[in-house]
Length: 123
Image (cartoon, rainbow, N blue to C red; front, side, top):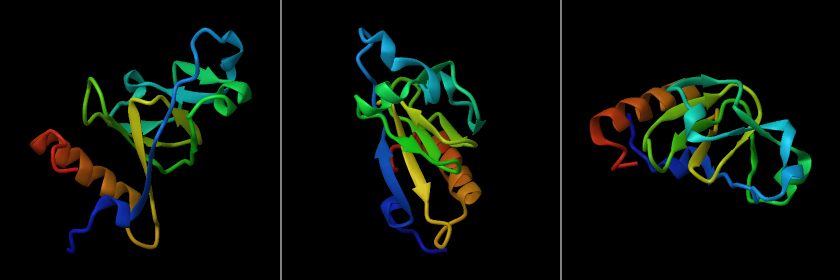
């Protein structure tokens, strides 16, 4: 096994949060995850959703199914695998694995163990 930086096998990024004062940004549309939605397993729903306007007017990004989600604040290291296309708050980073270079489930389990053992310090 060869160890490489995560950015060599996956596209990395993080989400965003629209202004809460703009009610038209929140509502039916795109699942929008917060750390509370991460379950160290597959994620296919969220407590909140962003409208197209909320997605367009924030730094939130749509991430495809198969993306690995990692909490950056509060519950650092809490993980998930997006089972559907979704977007995330600024408290969640994502990795979109390159299927030619690494298996999504392998990477997810590696990160899960690494975070449990090392508190994600080496990620």
